[in-house]
Length: 499
Image 1: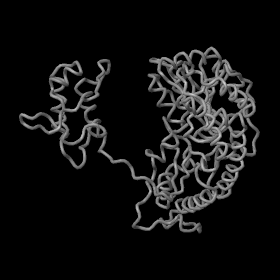
Image 2 (image 1 turned 120 degrees about the horizontal axis):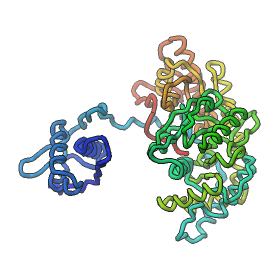
Image 3 (image 1 turned 90 degrees about the vertical axis):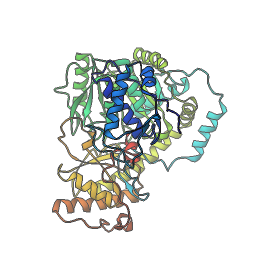
Image 4 (image 1 turned 90 degrees about the horizontal axis):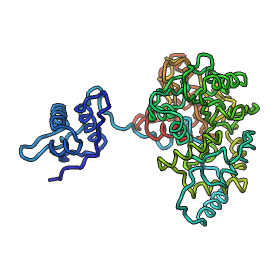
């Protein structure tokens, strides 16, 4: 017989949800997640009540609710146990239990956004950077600002790549955009504050701001970017992606950038500028960063996840020295840090010019893939956002999008759509096509399959093998498991959040 499990459960007396409902919900999740295994013995009602500092009645009624739902099994004189079941029952109000979605086939063509090409890098430069990092002893007191030498090199990199005149005092080294967002939220937001996020937009920003107890306000965007007219006047923070809006792909024009900064000065809001995909542009001149236009009202976030690899885990936060200092002090209080050896390796890549050479090489490579997407899909649908970045929007009627995504998945092509990026009502619909992680031949092959599917779907033709003359890669036999139609979770979806 197993001993009773020690449950790491906490309840909130400040919540509007009753304690009994909270406890039952925590226990259901523990059983769904595997923290409580079938046959596991639960603590006695008296022991759990003492642990949670609640009345025994609360525990008894929560247990009774789970008995009634079939989650628990009581054995006379032996205690309370997790019921043995082939499939957990349906939790009230949460829909039927669903297993994790299947992984896509290994040979699927991945045209989902958010992932760069990581197979083409300078092996000698990479090894040199890590040898240099290994030569240094481990540090005992991490600098919350980041390594001073790396901050100096990043300031020079931003001057060359983005035309920004900044010094080390303006820079704090982060673990990426998500970490930078959380540090901004820690310093600028809290209960009762309001934070604006582009809609549609980067869902991680919504999650981070909500986790810091801010009210998330969806701010509509159009084909050029965030719509300034009508922005609420009581926002503490506005998150935006002006270099290449995610996911619609717009580049915020200069007049609208100036109106946005005028709004920020008038309202006292801080604009958090995610310099997403800014390093990659095609056939267009670079636009100045919002930070360069008004450093007093803007915090700029950058990352190496798209330029080098998501696995590196290094980014930067650029802001007014006073705000950067405040963020650094708060960072110590939450024990947040960026790995010292990783920072040293990145510093070596910058110092030897290896990162700049990699960027130049990848700009040419991505330009070829972007040209293939435009050439093949341009005749069958309207493309937006093809002047920059690593993704485009293929605009389609809302009624056609789910069918095209599902049929493409069955043909071995993984796609994303605009629907999951909306917080409010959607007004632009289509496919968000990433061309960073697939090879040029696969980009061409996948786009040919997709073009044929779009044409067939618009014409109302029945589904057929979508090889589009591209070889066997696009075919699927009836006996082979299909790729999931719209992978809203799991590895293919998670990669789009790694910034």
